[in-house]
Length: 364
Ligand code: SF4
Image (cartoon, rainbow, N blue to C red; front, top):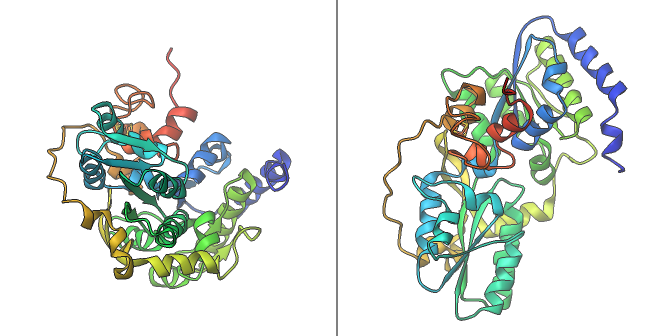
């Protein structure tokens, strides 16, 4: 497949790994921000091709994993309202809030539906005018444009029974929060290529300079990842706190202008709470005042607080890069993809799911 197969070439991968080893003179700790990159690193054994001096930490770049429990509880409460159809992406339905998940709510009778796009929810609202259709909008700058376009489409169609429960988050403020933490260990970042395809790489220069770390925009195929790691190690060894684009076939400096315009038109930037990271200033999106009529939080009363169940889950520490999944006492025992206890095992982009699939200890 063009643009994929040529980025899987084994001989080229070995050459890049050798170049990384040759360039590395001391220990470096890098973080890949995106869960898709985490899965690709483990799936292709790239972490095992690197010199021991390179440590990879896995960042909070899985949208389902960082959606806070209270947002899921709010979605569950809305789904339980008579007449409501609650729609979201498949992974989102399985993630537990403080206690239950949306799938549990569905089992108890709520009308919860999986969709592939927010526009599917708009079409549902148009087809079922007697019902309130709510789309639970999660994800980063990659999914926010589609949510914005759904609102614009609902407005164009004159739909009064469509709304968004918005939990979108923004990547650069999370990188900044990780770097500003007193116990930060990350010395270089691999930024997420798809987020930069939408937003460009302009937001990363000030962060790199403020914190003295290189940030390399990186793709998802094996050679993309090795190329990004090499560029990051090269910058670290040379003492450069700069931004580099190692995913030039997709990312342009200015990003995707129409997608950014849709985000700017429909949303406004707000503080947002991230699972595992707490509240981060200016790290989320909410509907702009001009689109408040589509805001499910205004249309439905706030959910009562749900008491959290005791859990061994350390996904918060994993999302901050403090620990790896194997450090969790429940990993691959009480917690599996079939019976997940936390978001990083539920999501197809979660670090625990990646370790379970590619690094699970084999029973003797
Ligand atoms: S293995 Fe399960 S319980 Fe442990 S941190 Fe991961 S998601 Fe949470």
